[in-house]
Length: 312
Image (tube, rainbow, N blue to C red; front, side, top):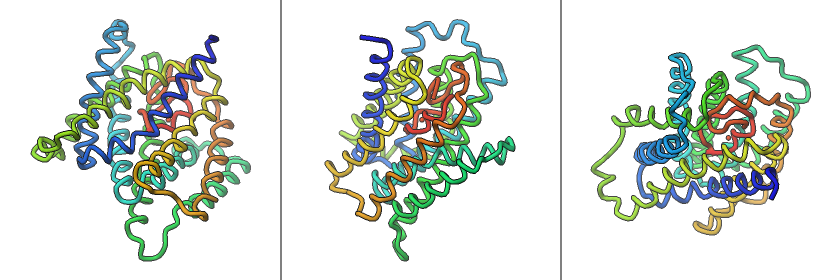
């Protein structure tokens, strides 16, 4: 098996796992703040154990500035998860996931606002295409407050993920696993005031789903992604990343019977195509930069390359 084939299998599995994340969130029965708090707790245990076993703490590469940037990225990542998980409840996993994939466009807009990066005519055109797709996918009608709320929450999550990506792209020379570890550790004191431990104690079987979010969707999934990103070209990463929303939409239909309508379905390929074009047009960041991924998106913490903005 070639290195690239192994990377393809790893990333495909990671994206399939990412697509089941919404099911774990809903089945846990916990509110969004509790879900994220315990995802951070179990995720920190998994990433910490893996990093220790691999010897990543030796010569970690952190400086006070890099540590501060990782922590700031963690603030954005944690509340990105809160908004996304709230969107699952307010609308549906399918709608929230598709809208969440507008992240690359917010990266373009943030680059223009914060760093005065020029938006080319081609990028502007794809932004317009993505916006048209978003309007179609939302399917929001006047008075449909639930869908409108879900749409707003998913968009807010996308903006926060883009902000985290901007911040963590400035971190070099540090293993992505360690940056991810810092980010989930930040979530513990950050969400402690909002956690309802009384309600969590009554979850019963919900604890299995919460543990899965931390061990599978934050530990195993990130390790698979980080390994795959080092083996694959950006173009293949960008294409395989769309396995995530496809699996999420299928899982939402298979488990909850949710599906998007015909008009909404017309908007999905517009967002997918526009996102792919914007991602492939972006300049790859150095492989040492990290966050949700070393060379690339959900939804892991922020990434070194635009393609990583696809994972929660």
